Image 1 (cartoon, one colour):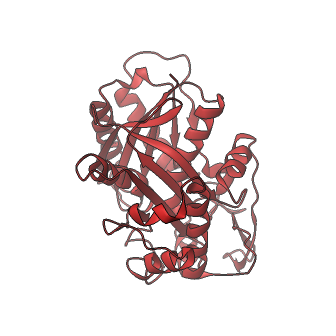
Image 2 (cartoon, rainbow, N blue to C red):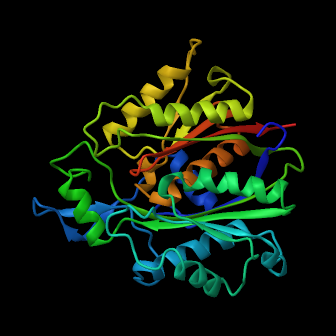
Image 3 (cartoon, one colour):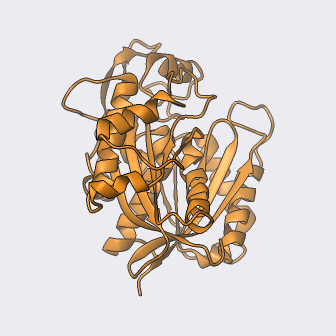
Length: 341
């Protein structure tokens, strides 16, 4: 992306710890968390705990996804006149097709339901991005093309996801992937909505995405092959090359890591492959510790937290590496820079 950075103009988040981006990011900064008992019981006879979004009614399934997506979009577009929304393409991020218990209608009906919820039709260049946790980076790459090749002034990247259905939870529980009293090597499930408004850089105090990269991991979490982090290593290499920098130039990392040792090991291996100069500190931030495993929203949440931290001055520095991974083996990375002048 040398010479073609895209800027994050605004963000929106709807999570278990806040129904707006400012509220959620403040809660994550304070390390607040809000897990509650679900309606489901694990194999030990204990209630499965999860990060559930408290809406005014007990909506479930695709209806709740559309509500969360609409709330996040309204949060993100609060400063954009509603009459201009129809000119903005919406890239809607949803769960990958390999997700166990994936809801029907995510590739067609959800987009229509979000528009109906908002009472607006987005631009014809809108699309669905069904890549789970790597969707945010995929959407950023698509947004860059829309902005620089198709002259779109702004692009909206949004997501809604939930792993709180019994078909999904039961599959993860059978494979010992949920965090329970009997299993510390797992994640706490969650749900969320998120949105990012991106455009060409147009001023100071903006978080820019200066590079994106992708890779494919053959030794997935369910594979018996030895993990060498080749997919994430390639994604980070491609993102750094795209941004024209090295890993030691960056100040900290922010990721979609949600508790499983496999993904923490992968991140550590990828770091060792790229970091050729000693750094005193290279923090690893993972918002999922506060909002849970939020699937396709995880990448957007990471970028929104990075944006808030940069704007409010509590980030570890202006240069950031974000990386994401999904269970299907797809890996993605983005290099971010906060322009402060």
